[in-house]
Length: 118
Image (cartoon, rainbow, N blue to C red):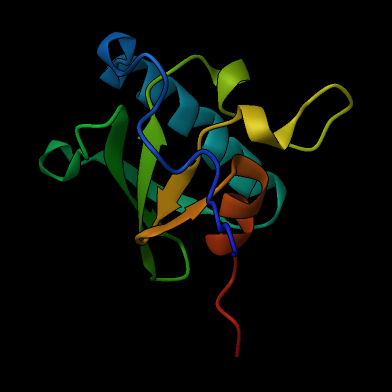
């Protein structure tokens, strides 16, 4: 028997307490983290029609290189979603973001938005 799981990809914990405002604040940090890695976001737009209904809120990133990326961001406090592999962080405790339909914890979602590979 094989058990395969994708931890953090289900509904965001306490979905009834998630907010679009918290997701927007998280996107501000996400955009800053992308800039720190050399990926410039020209425009970040909330796209409520794409909200999943599971505690994640939809945004579209128009990148300076001409690409567009869709991100579904959990609407919980930043410290509960921004997994960066720091001391004391346990990857199992963090919900995933969705980038163009694929799920990633924050640290790896940044890479999914990074420069297109040739």
